[in-house]
Image: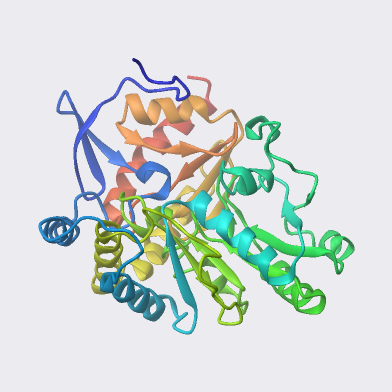
Length: 379
């Protein structure tokens, strides 16, 4: 048996990682400014993280949600305090797609409706409900119905007002669009979404899977504005590489036994990983670091030749280039040994560890500057 070949792969095999760096099988070191799609939040193999997972594995790694698992409560309490959502409930799952899937399902349970408003360039996951609300027909199979989802332009207040009515179950919106190009949701837009959901009895779901967990310089990106969602989804940085996702649920939603469920969600190892991440984020002030270092990076990229626009918040950054970005990305990787991502043909996507330092940023700035300056003069 071989692997189902759905991933285009670079000929690089990481075998070791520490902090913001990884090493391949040949011993070459790389600066990691992508973190496996924003997953590495506190740095690779952080000592506290390794210790907590090892300790838990030596006790018990897994049992189902049919027994008492106190470590789930510890995770919920720490997450509530650090995020500022102590009065919300937490439902634990395994991924961002699952978080969005359960958010949509819970919203529909709440008001008995099924019409969803989503946005152009959105990405919410690849499972049935999540992919239906994702603006990419190429990844929605015929079995994934989309007729209940209405896509409107992102950040368009007037279009949102026109689309809302008593049939709308929920608005689902990313705090910062990731795959769509690092597009930041405006305060005016989110506030209008909150107002309209209140007016029509709809549910406001803020997808914080990629932009949450400190990445924006606030715990959740919508906290840059005075907006309180009904449901908040999170996953990527929650476990620093261990699969875990969460749905933060406003207290107006009432739990009923059996309405939601999961086999692996909230298992002992996942919770140990989640607690370790929160411990390190608090002890090392990583949310604040993301804000400071992110501003430093963005300020120094603006104005470089070939750079059309710099978007984002904190350490979720999109650098839009005049020319297709793939050449730049490959030169960064193979000539300067720096991992980055992309979001469309012209946008370099940076999602590094929240522990990234200004010294790390300077390495990137030197390499990126050399590349774009050379490209700009046709070298």
